Length: 193
Ligand code: SAM
Image 1 (tube, helix red, strand yellow):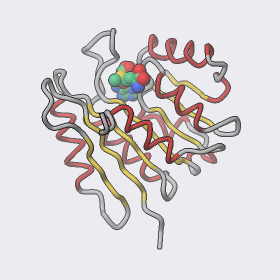
Image 2 (image 1 turned 120 degrees about the vertical axis):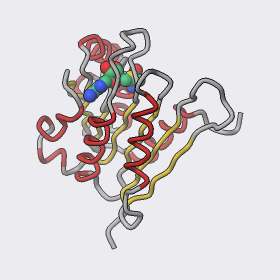
Image 3 (image 1 turned 90 degrees about the vertical axis):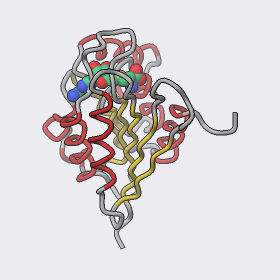
Image 4 (image 1 turned 180 degrees about the vertical axis):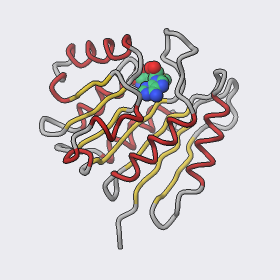
């Protein structure tokens, strides 16, 4: 298939954004796939901050980083991502280059523990405040679960209103697939003129 699948495209966007020495956030680390990927992109001198409210998610992410010998490149918080401003050192927050969110529930775990519209939009706003010019936020939006549609609508409503003078906002997804296929929302901060 020539068209990139959603997760594949999310990673490609992050690959184009992050380089050695950058600071990045995985807002919903889950099983740690994205934390590992970001940790590879930011190299030895960068750093990743990863969040999840579930103990199991932090454990799984920690194990994944250890298995790949990359545990020193990431700091994991068993906290909600709305604690970003309170937990990341200021000098790193002000260098923030990229962030990724995977909305929804942790696969193989309690499906009732899900991201919420209020916390997600609040955290995206915080990240956009600190994001560097040319920095990128990627949200992979899963919405087939209870509450998912509400979060999807709140997020789209929020990002559609972001000022086009400051941000480029993209939606990417397949529109002929069954069962609420995930899609991407990507927000790029424009360079100041
Ligand atoms: N990216 C993950 C991976 O690679 O496995 C999958 C993430 S999963 C779709 C969504 C995760 O968001 C769940 O692990 C859930 O516990 C977490 N979550 C829900 N609300 C959260 C919040 N407010 N802050 C941080 N994580 C949250």
